[in-house]
Image (cartoon, rainbow, N blue to C red; front, side, top):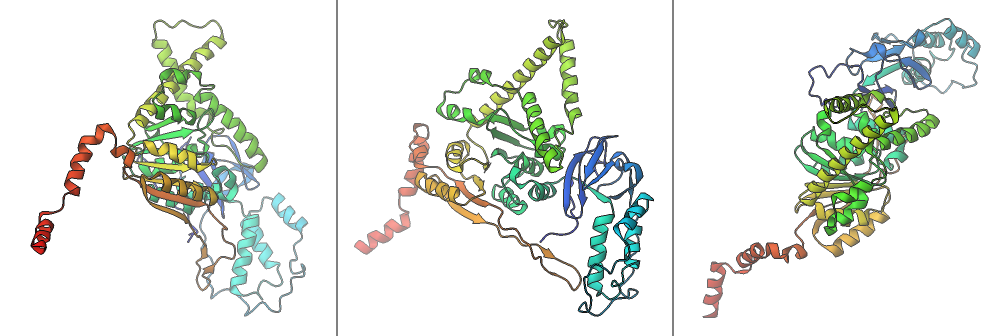
Length: 495
């Protein structure tokens, strides 16, 4: 059941995190439409055919509703008491009302003239009500529906919300479901629950959902533990992860490792020299992802959070410059190109160092869980990544279609080493909850994808390992020997 008021979860180490600050990532809400942006002074934001500046929202609390005034300024909207049902004039039914388009006396030119005079949307709605010949003949429910429809069209109000997993997943599923592989928000909640995502875990994630699954895991872990993200291509895409606005402390436990190096890590042939042939560094990958996102979002009237946060990398650049200044062997470059090459080389070295740290964590093969949500076929991914998960740990695989997961289910049964396999689909229906008008909504989601979950166990191949032969033989000697009471009973029956 979906409630009308979205309250984001508060996760912040700062005492004043309930207030909006300059540089924070926020979510704009109008009716059922959401959009994630970054608060920056004197930057024009376009949302639902309205443009405005976010300067005035700084210092206000999350959840505040603002009204767009002249010049694109936002002002807090004052709540007014609505008339009770006893003071309203309403009809008994709508059977005699004919929708012939002649009930409204105001024309479109009159409404446009009112807008040009600077009259607020609330006053325009009031005039529409007064100039409607059929408004008083409608029932109370029909009047509320009419007022809500006109307010949505003429009132320019925006609510500022704090980003959370639920809000961002609803936003992506409603506006750009293809970027998250059509993963519904209740399916994402099931993944976090079945995967036992909690603080202190060591998790492995392979996702191509613009970083939404990664951000959801980081939010639930609260900056404690470690996450190893496996990525295809040149670098990880974390557009949705940036919308959460995590502090830097959350990023200390985030590692990344290329997917094409997993086989060499499993075979024991992985070496540090293999990472030197990476085609791009992380900074260039982020820039290329931002360009791609800008082109796609320009067509769909959305904005890329990564493109809106050019200042987010300034502290890192400043720190790099301080290190360069402290280096006695470093000489001032004669040209600007030499300086860029030096910074690029430093970024590549830092990325290489993070890759080696991720490889060391994966080589321990004691991860506390595995999450897979990608556009690739799940079977080869899961069979390869399960070797990095410790026994008695959960794994969850998401796919938009059922058939790949059925094949994956069969392969896992043949492979062994897993128990409690479960293939499920979540069924979701939204309800309208209002006085005397609570009922299921007419439109519902056709599907939110499928989940395959289970737990890892020690397989027979691991029991046969020479390193575990002593422990397994002791375990077998304890388990295979019959209890003394049972042997005595058998002997008495035989005599």
